[in-house]
Each structure stands twice: as structure tokens, then as C-alpha cells.
Image 1 (cartoon, chains in turn cyan, green):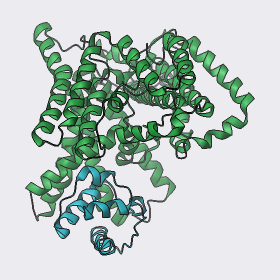
Image 2: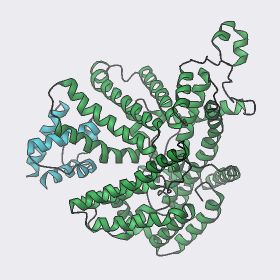
Image 3: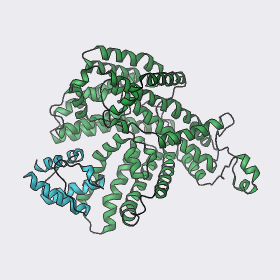
Image 4: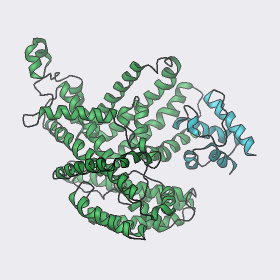
Length: 75
Length: 500
């Protein structure tokens, strides 16, 4: 389940940053170049749109690891 | 009784530390001394402070009900707006001029933000069961209660729950003391020395003097240094004091004056506030605008997705500092510059200048542009009113002459034609020219070359252990600095950010 979500997240991130992104569960946001405050907004909106879910933005901003974001997606 | 007073350093701090280190109930002791600290510094508003705390605790119990949550946030903001702006307006109608004669409840902007963040954290279930004691500790904790750094309640609870909080850690005490003394030195030696020249310069302009080109730049730059060393000095003192009682506060400044872009500057200046503004203002505004306005046109897309949220956020930052037109201009100007910076980075620098971005010369040009743009922005921050700021900015553009030193202009005739009569340094006969030149050089050297707390804080300041190895030398240096600072405390000045 989480593996699928991770794949989908990587797809979304690759689309946004226009390069191949292959993050792992224990990867950190900081590992992706240009993942800044403006990118945060694009990513959140894109996740909500593609996965048809609603994410709490306070929790999204405060998540540092990819596993934290996957947890939010799975909620 | 603030951090830079004899009363705090000679009485309050030692008594608190002795009680803290000899007591088992460290949390209660810290809360008791924190309330005492507030009562002593702002006795008239102590009850308001307590009332708001209790009120927010009750709100937190019902925060799951959306209507109560919205009411709670609006109530907090209304109280802040009343104290910060409405009383100023009432004063204006009563006396005919906006003068900040009213004493604001101490730290109201900071503790209101802390209360609101606490409510959000409860709503988002970052705190499982809201309890009164952690809230009381978060809001009243004396090292950070007046001017930050902001810390989330979850982080504070986590620290207080750990066993290490209750152990007497003498290494923390010593490292905290070192950080406190370094912060105090920044305030007393650099910020207060700069204040002497900055105040004199701005008063002269207020009285109608036309400033020359060089003197305008020198004193505006000196103000930026004054503000930086004043506020970062305060933050260091707060971090040091908190560490002495086993609490790690986040760093608030990461050498912002070394920044090579406005984006970088705002990522490094007053970091904890920037993070909160981003999370609670910029992010929701951006999401809301995106959901309401959906446009395909790329120009309009940039306007709605970047320009509008950035400008609105910085307008709020400006207003947070105060209701005067200067703060509004300060906010708008910074927002506009940040937007330009984003455009430059995304559409020019990353696309066409990628090859050149690593060149040393390009970085130096970026730094010069960033530094002096920030100097201009902060003229609005410091000026009493718009006309003073306008005059100084005109002076910076050379409208009132260039103000070369007399020795130089008397040798070269052509300089006389564009010269103004102002002195560049010292500004007035009674102020020491050499002292001001040395001060500005020292400020440049320290802010551009020295390491900051961030480089030590990554690993709970354990990298500062090297200081502890040279115990004797450290001890002697510390005592010398401490005595010199304490002797200089006779000219007490307030911290700039206590006004906000």
C-alpha cells in the first residue's frame, strides 16, 4: 500500500521538478533541490488533485521525511 | 529587569539558577520565576497575560468545534489589534499625532502568536490532551516570552518529559553562559555603540537637516548592524538562558547579512517568525488563491500564484511591526523585492546563468546588491515618519550632494561642486569619527566572517566542547568579557524588538 503511494508521490514530484525523482521512505525533503516553500504548495495541490484526498497543510509543512508525507496520504 | 540590566544579571539570574539546580521540581521553579519576571517587567498587564492564558486553555478543550476554534483565533487577534493599532488611532485623534506613548503589554505579539499556534496544534492533534501546565510553560518561559525565538509546544513538551531535563547538567550551564555572554556582548558593545550614531543621525534628519550621499549610506548601514546585533544578541541570550535550564530553543538568525539574495535573507533573518508566517499566512493564502482562481494564462498565473501571496504576506509582516505607513512600505518593498528575486531565479538565473552562478565575482555582485537593498528597506523600518525616510533615501541617491570628507574635497575642486557640508562619519563634532569608522568595520568583519550559533547547534552544541577543553583560558576570557560588559551596562538601552 505505502509502496504504491511512494511510487505515486515520486511520479508527482518528477512531474513538478521536471526530472526523474526516486525518493525512499527514509529520504528527506532537503534531498530534492529546489523543494522550497513555493514548491510545497504545488506538491500539496498536486497530491490532492491526483489522489483525490485532502491533506492537512500544517501537518504537511511540518513533515520533513517522505515517510511523514506518506503517512498523511494514508490517513 | 531585562537581560541587560544589573538587577537581572546580579540578582534574578543567580537566584533562579541556584534554585533551579538545587530543586527537584524544576518545571514549577521555572514557571514561578517566569511569572515573576513578567510581573516585574509589566505589572499593569500581568492580569491580562494570565487571563489570556486561561482563556486559551479553555478554548483548547473545545477546539474540535470549528466555530469555537475560529472564535478563539479571532479573539486573540482582536486583542492584539486593539493594543497595537486601535489605541494608536485613538491617541492620534486625541493628541493629533501618532506617538507611541502608550506602553504595550510586554511581548503581546509574541505570546498572542504562541497562543494561536497552540490552538492550531491542538486542532491538528499535535498535542493529544491539552493541559494547562505545558501551555503556561510555553507562553511564560522567560528566556523567550518577550521576543522569541518561537518554539512549538510539542517540542517543548518532548524536552520537559525527557529525563535529561531533570538532571543537573553543568556542561549545559557553562555553554549556556558562554552563549548568553556572547549575546550580551553583541548588544552592549556593537548594537548600543551603533545606536549612539544612528539615533543622532536620524534625530538630525527629523529636525530638518539634508543628509549627503555618503553619510546617508554610512548611518543607514549602521542601523542595519544595530538592529541585527540587537536582535540576534537578544536571541543568543534567550538561547543561552534556556540552555542553562536544559531547554534547547531553535536558532533565530543564521548570518543573514552574508545572504546573496533576498530569498536567502528572509530564510536566515528571524527564522522562527518566518517559519510561522509561512505556515500560518503564506501557505493558506496561496492555497486559497489557487483554489479560487484557476487561470491558464502564464502571466496571470504568475501574478496569482506568486505575486499576490507574497505581497499579502509581506504586507501582514509590515503591519505586524506596527500601524505606521513606514512599516507598510517596509512590508510592500520587501514583498516586491522577494517577488523580483523569485522571477530572476526561476526565469533567468536558473535558465540562462547556470554556468556563471558558481563564479566568485557573480556571488560578490549578488551579495553587494542584496546587502545594500536591505539597507534601503530598513531605512523605512527605523525612520520616525515617511518624510524622514524619504529624505534619507533622497540623500542615498545623492540629491543633497555627496558628502566627501573635507580633507578630500579641499584638494580636488570638482568634488566641491557635488559636495554637501555634512560630515560623513561622526556626523557631529562631539561624536568620535575614528570610533565610528572602527565600529562599522568591526560590524562588517563580525557579521560577514564569524561563525554563528547555527554551526554549533546542530548537535546540541556539543561541538562547543572544544571550548570546554581549554577550560582555564575560556574561563579567564569569559570573566574578562563579562566584567567589561557589566561595566558598560550603566548606559542601559531597551531591545528594539520589545516594541513589537
